[in-house]
Length: 299
Image 1 (spheres, rainbow, N blue to C red):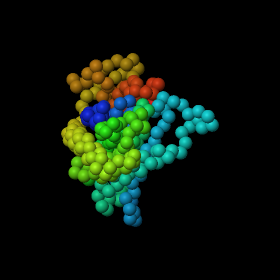
Image 2 (image 1 turned 60 degrees about the vertical axis):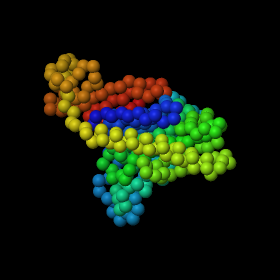
Image 3 (image 1 turned 45 degrees about the vertical axis):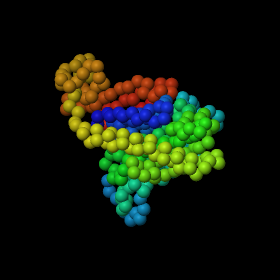
Image 4 (image 1 turned 45 degrees about the horizontal axis):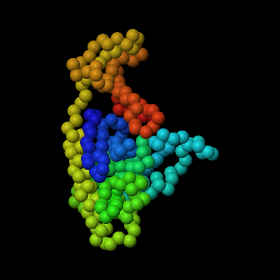
C-alpha cells in the first residue's frame, strides 16, 4: 500500500493525516497528528456476518498509555491497568456518531481501535481519534455511509476558536465537540457557562464549517487510496556478506527498502518488504518502526 498524506488547516495548527504506513494488515488504518499529539486508529471487520445477530456488533476501544507522554507508571501499579474513565468516555464518543452511518442489516463484527502514540498535554487526542477512525473506515472496504469530521469548539474573549488547547479550555466559555458529515451535524457534546442559545448555535455552525473541510480532505484521501498500484521495486541481497546481487531500476539507494530478497537463510523466491524509521514520534524518549511486508512493529 502506498503512503498518502494530507494536511488540513484547523484552528491554530494543521491536522495531519497519513495512511498506508502502519497497521497494513488492518482493513483500514490512519495516523492523525495535531501539534505533538499523535493517534493511530485501525478498523477491522469480519468477512462473514455474525449468526443470529439482531444488532450491529461494533466494538470501539480507545487507549491512552503513559509512554505517549514519555512517562513510566510508578507506585504500586507498574503496568497499564483497566481503561480509565476518560478512555471509556472517549470510546463512547467515537461510537455514537459512527454507529448510525453503517448500513442497516450489516451484522459483521467490526472493531475500531485507537491508540494514543504521543500526547503533548495541550491538544486532547479524543477529537483526533474520531477523525482517525473516520479516515480508517473511509479508506477501507468496510461499508460506511459517509466520512465524519470532528472538532472541538471554544470561546475566548467573545471569539470562537477551533481545537483550543487544554490551557485555553480552562478559560473558555464553551467546551463543545461537534461531529458531522458534509451535509449535517451528527453529534454535539460538551458544556458551557451560561451562554445564550444564539451563541451556542453559532458555535455548532462554526464547528460544522471546519468539519466539512475535514470531510472533503478525507474524500480526497480516499480517491488517492483507490488509485494505488502494486509495488514493483526490489533488491536481491546475499545474507552471508550483504552483497547486492541484483536490483530493479525502481529501487533507489536513498529510499527505504521496498522489497528485499535474501540468499542464505531465506530461499531466493521469498520476497520480504522492509522499511525502517528511527524516532517516528515527537515526545517518547526514542522509538522506531520496522515494517516487513504487511507486518509492522512500533516501539
